Length: 319
Image 1 (cartoon, rainbow, N blue to C red):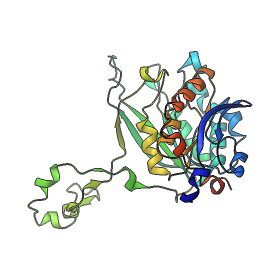
Image 2: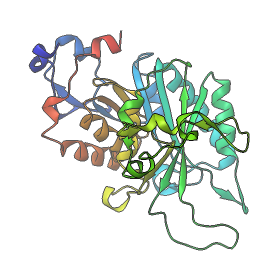
Image 3: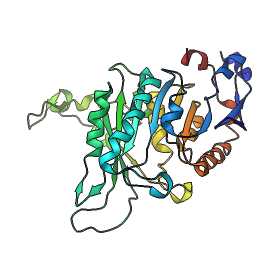
């Protein structure tokens, strides 16, 4: 496929196509039958998702409007009504995701009348009833969380990244997100005890154990499920932009080069930009016109990478 790459590239030249903002493709004719690829679609997520083919997406990464938040831009949804609003969207996301795909939902409960509302927990239950598997929960630790003081709680420094799948057998490339071991291992592994050379069971009988000898010769380790990332807002001109490193991490973990990444609440285009940088295609849906324009501008700022986006897998991905 690589030898035909020049005939398969996509150039990000803005064109209007109905309610969508599409890229002009310098690709094979069959790719033009998928006009939603590499587009910023301006419209309601529930309506626009219905126009996508079934099982065409490798990964969904998104952060929808939180309950009673962003009222000036998205209208806001009362926490009691949040599940009813999102559930139909969840069904459409289930339809468009491949059986080996993943859905990562960045969300956080809010405080109502002095206690955390349960709308996120209720949403998890509702999605499971639709057939989603709640496979994992990752935590985004916001290293520069907003300062403040409250009488009954401390600063909110983390958000959920809920990982849902359609099957227990899904695409996952754990090696792509491994982290450096660090210099600590040099001294720790220099002189191993007898306990270090066998699986040492936990002293509290938790069932966990370790064999320190296994770390010899390793330069990288698998990460934890906590991502330590700073927030981004003012520099994104969006009221709730997550850092590019957040979708980037999940894109590397759950897709391969040429895969298709969907964000049905695209905002300023962070997910699309991350996908392009990692040589993936994207589909973005955004309700607000000004954010669609912002996303298009942000996408247009990566000219060096635009001609390199491969579309070799498009025909197979949407078969």
